Length: 441
Image (cartoon, rainbow, N blue to C red; front, side, top):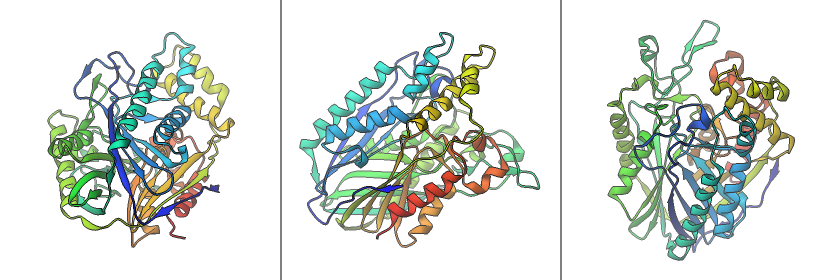
């Protein structure tokens, strides 16, 4: 693990908000080909971000209404954002909200499935690069309009009746028997407690005088009410953000999903269409509550910290077996395309391409950026590391590792553990990296 340079500045901070559309074309794969492809656009998918200027090289924070951006695709897009902003890719945090009726981009997985004409594409590369070009153009247009940052505000609102832990149905030994997913109709699972969650939507606002310029919202749950029907939507998290955006067109609103690897709305959502507006309202109410309760301070010293980690693959992953799974036509499309993603991860590790962990320090406010789908325990652990600070966690950065369980959960099995592509030592690596980038030393 190697520490990268950091920088700090107590004044002269400016912010350039930007946004661009990333709605996939009709017929495009959703969730990497695991569910029905795009048939209808219910609402547009967007990418929103900010460039922070005046604290060393620029810093870019961007979040996309996609399922994920993985491995080489993540590196390519971060590089494009960095070049557009005049900075280096280690000073770019690119995340996804993780809606499932949306693209899931991995170049190597696309190469693998493209060798088999009967498999759906993972991502249309021409479309992907159009989105990258839009991001460059959006930043180029935003930079000349950068606004001064005079104050930073932070606050939180409690979200009622959305998040619940997926891994609550266990036997006497702790083994996970059934996952309570994004939607649930099983009374046994619905009646169980919420389990371990983070109930707060945290908000950080950048001000130019009395005017809000950008508001960053952080909440932790899988953001789907229902999906797999070919209808593209930003779903309840995105719809709540868009409502705030419509109300405040001069303030750009961003929404980041936290460590939701084992968190979803299943206790409060049965996939009935009428649940979506209810969940949207609950997220929206918490956003407003957090903005109403802001603690506003003059712009503090800013510091950007990064470190790199190189995980180890879980021992059970076998490249030859995964390639055979992709090639065997009698297997399901889901299993074959999923094997392509997992094989792509092994190829990435062969190239020793590390994952960058970063944190933005704004005085007592700290914004932590993590890869994959980590368990909620990592988010709570980050808050415990800095108990006197306002720590906001964005996960779903580089999606290469897929699920990231805490090591204590590996013996208990369940879907999330079965879909973790790193071995249990990644817990210690990630925890050490978090401590390093969050530390004030």
